[in-house]
Image (cartoon, rainbow, N blue to C red):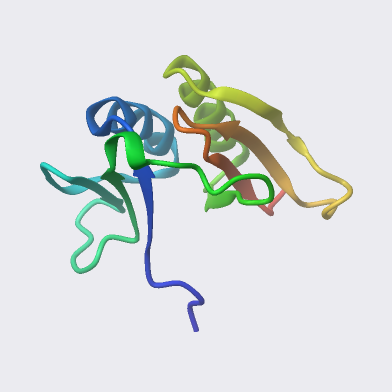
Length: 131
């Protein structure tokens, strides 16, 4: 059973944030599946239904949730974690932890952390070791 159906984040500048998320989420296999003047929605190619992830243009009302919040995206591979991190940094994000194994979580926990343009802390994670 899934715990969450979908999640949305408020962003100050929708076009700017969409460019960031287009770049950062592509290595994870997520693409724009719907957009309108107030939202850009992401999911796997061909996904139908309520988008699993969306950004909403909130202008000056946008606020990151603050210390303690972060959102982890599933990555298909170690390479995808590296590409997520590199793409997010190149698109203006801030490094919050480079790609690597986090032994304190699990010997198989391979991840990278970034902060988006609005201050949301994001993670890409995969649990498998390279073959």
